[in-house]
Length: 383
Ligand code: SF4
Image (cartoon, rainbow, N blue to C red):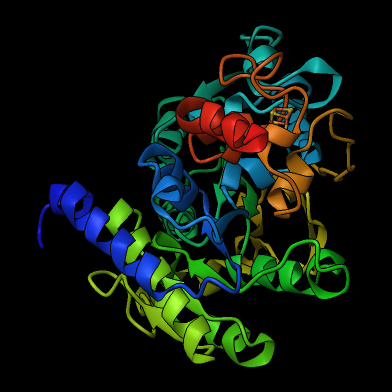
């Protein structure tokens, strides 16, 4: 298998579905969390849930970087553009996440004093570097979000800025870490005490695992007795991973298995890991939307690179801000609720008019459900 179409082959999917149906035990339920938004998107887009037996349920996890960004962090980015007059650069989806006061970065763009600053969409951190080079008399800040996949390019950009002597470039670092979020879910009252989120195993991240490898998940398998199967983002990857999880559960095993062997190794990308640890260090705590403050779950820029740290340069002080009261993003990110449980879903909240972060990115659970599967959920509820 070399080409992407072969990972989307409908006949193979049906065979896998038939195998899963034969192997699941009728006397129990199987509840698996797909951590990544990429898996959530694939499950919704290709109708994977519809191919599974009724007693196999997929629970969406918090692995969408735009979704977990708390409002307080977006407020900081808006402040940089409006009050400090910087050219604030970030990815398209980040621009659309609702912030405090009815604002978003997109809406704030109309309020910026263009003689000083701006808010610009970029495809990569290298675009922000170029903007800094092209505008030596302006301050340029890259609003860096994402999991371990997007962290190494930010580290490279900071090193590059130093090598070039770029004095007008800095980074608002909001990079977060996957294993800490998994731990937070496993330790949450909903999973540990209340049992309202029954979890029998995880589909482990695809792209994140190419960087960190499969070893970091061994702790969860051993300590919490939860099987983990790392899987690619194509529908057959996901189906195969579900079959592997079903087999582990049936056999009473709790191991880390790797379905995504074409890209993930046990040790991961050592060069990328070294780069990240040269430039970044752990924060004591970081607020995630839905999960609250999670200890040692995010990165900040190390002291030797402090001149590129926007938080230090602009003396930014983080202030938490409340979510929209009617928005259920927090509960959805913890696996407690589904998009259809939110009364704003598909009415006032759509991908064109997002009221919460889960409706912004195509990897967000609400956006994926709205685009591909909302009617099926509603029908199941009424069945
Ligand atoms: S539908 Fe909109 S308001 Fe409701 S949880 Fe999803 S993003 Fe939040």
